[in-house]
Length: 411
Image (cartoon, rainbow, N blue to C red; front, top):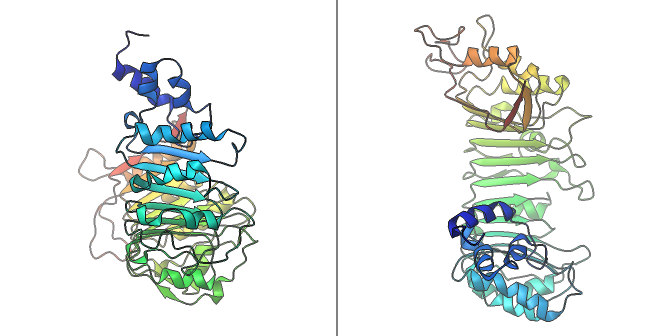
């Protein structure tokens, strides 16, 4: 082992520390476990630059309150010390206020290097963070422990002008948690109160929006939301939770509560859609859409029908991503045949994710052959020079790219 070069050991260690979720206080943390072997292994395994662009510091006080203060300080100090001047990705979790803990002060010393920050601590602790030092945070995720009530606004991140991505996983508003709204480009909204909706209007640089209804406990009536227009948003992702109000995307567009004139990418993720039919937004409101991502919507033939009818109205879509199980009904519907209109006539890129398919499969092969250019002048199976819906001129409907890299093909 002593003769193995450092670069080879580093390559091996990369597989041991691939996960970024390891708790820095956990003795079973892979880098820490490797570091006990020898001084050389310690230097290689605990130096974050070898494994990623960020130093990863995850501190979960909920699990290790019984540890001595000295032990916690030693472990918390290790990553900032060894990462030198690297940017830090920090996760801080605690059910109780820890602003008086020595480790909290130790974290403050590296705050100017934080680029990603995920935090779930009581509001008093959140307010005690060194807001003036957060000059480099670009990704921020904030939640509150259960039972922690809103007493006063938390102004910690008001001046964090480098923030570009924000995830709020608690019932916060622009008043209770002021943020530099003019710089935020990516925003995750997990509740649909009037305050949340009004706050979206302040995000003048917003490009990517994610909507996620958390549960029935956070009840909301989408039809009561006022109309909001977000002209800069080009990407929308909607998570349709199994225990929340179904059809968030469809209802928001149908009621004109959400107007996105520049939308080019739409992703809809259906969770555990076993006893209901997927709902899709009206196609006439998605005329600028070119990329469509559908996840977990076609696990059965009954659900594939509504999905195909929706796809049949998406003539302008050029890239389709299907994530999750799908049957032959999808590929039969997308197969180009001379006697029927083409679904997705302008489709150029197809990506299949998270699926297991038998191969060779005659239905799947028939679909591929009908959509791919053949080595002859006339193209393949009628898929050439067909007049497309709403197209100004005829052109081939050949796929330019098919990504099956994440599909498990079995004989």
